[in-house]
Length: 235
Image (cartoon, rainbow, N blue to C red):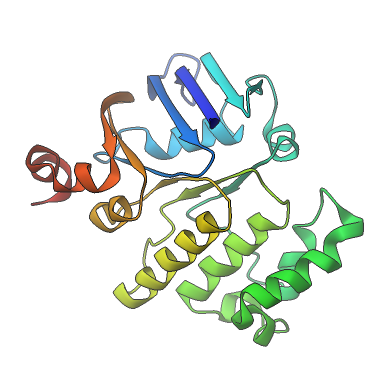
């Protein structure tokens, strides 16, 4: 069964501008799905359309079989979609604890319980709970950003280039955290610049070119495809 079904979505930032031009994708209940493609292909815009941050001009978005196309970002969050953007994904002037607490807006009564559960899952956050978010390393900030996304108890998590700017070691640790979340029952749709590594941990992958579907397949198979590697993976 698919938790997410996106059909022929068209979207852009201006009245006439179209960046996503009829892309379709699905995410199964137990999957990690990665979107790859050249710069300017519309990958991040596609995620924002799913999250409700960019309105779809055409097409349909269903979450767990329910049509959420007409809902705004908060409505999508209430439906169960959590979006972790690439940039400005934590509040640097707030502590780790404060970042988590303000992310519990959908269930204020359950915020303290969720924060404690996240401290158990990510001991680094517990150790740094009083530290300002801007003092964290890049990898630590990304873990905090994902933890903030988990505060809404999502049915699906969207990650926009989660390893951008990280060292190879921090990127590997971040991928391990993504796999752990998925094994815990959370489906994930992500855009990732480290395409080979991302596809290796993905159930399936999509190649997006000029806002349209170009290819789809099992993650490791896409990573090993000579033509895909030549065109998009630098090999």
